[in-house]
Length: 409
Image 1 (cartoon, rainbow, N blue to C red):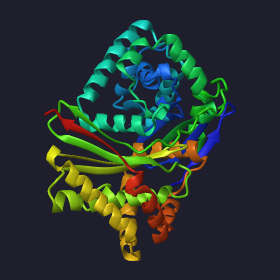
Image 2 (cartoon, one colour):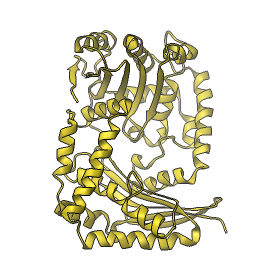
Image 3 (cartoon, rainbow, N blue to C red):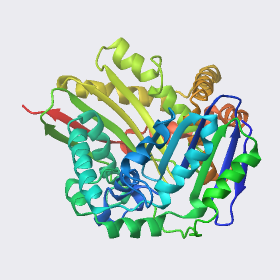
Image 4 (cartoon, helix red, strand yellow):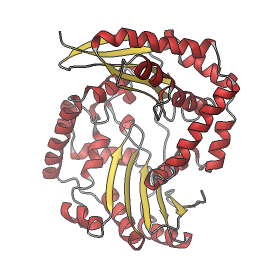
């Protein structure tokens, strides 16, 4: 897809993605997330993401929330381990309104104590709700074990204890230390000429003081393989198998994405879905995932089933892993996997807000954005030998950890 990048003097980049649609999408991506928190700041990046909607120097909470909703637009935000993202979808005439609001909430929020107390309660409820969903909570517990002792292992929401102690000064210190202008991208996908996006972006972001990035993230160490079981007040057993994996910059990243999709990615025809659900009727829910981060990654395979079937499910999974390791994919099998993966990516391009966010992240991670054709060429370039090498490492039972939640007796 065609795009243009304009860099302001303070390092903030404006990403322009032309589109003929009457609907526009925009985001501001900040390369700062929960991994950048100190130990006593757990949940702070997410807390800030909530609070930027709760009063600025010139707007009340209600004025922030209605600024775009009054013209039928959608405004939202989220926090990950490495990013904070604010995004909006709106009709084309409201670009100025959207970018001005992004500026106001990100750079001029006041974080009043009364709003902090109210939002603290909201987040504590969110934590409690999350813990009531074992199929979600198990992922956080698994990451905490895989990245033991590292900020990547901490829950993005934080803990009840940490959220209760977060202060206004903590917020200001975190923003000063982590909101780097050369690690921010304001991206706009819409029916505008480049000159309009540059003019509007310059109007609202050129005066932001320069705050350049100083490398400070530490890569996690490899942790020992574990097999841990916990009893909880649940009715179904939940299990995750996985390990640390390749980073965003590893040459095997594309190959592992392809292998992950083949194992149990999107769709019902994946290897493990056919084996566990269709053939043996063991698990209603089974899915694998691979998340690549700036200096590491994580590969997971999750399933939920009756507690009596957990061991059989694990045995069947390891059996399939062994088959892939000992009998590499044929060229025909690999091409089928590539065709499926390429088709899914192409269909995903229809999600316009997802596309603009993905492109903005790519600009931060790689200082470039690959075209769809380039992405497809990278997938087509993956060889059977490469997949075999990845499988031999990532699917080796001795390298995989297990975490299970079992119902109470």
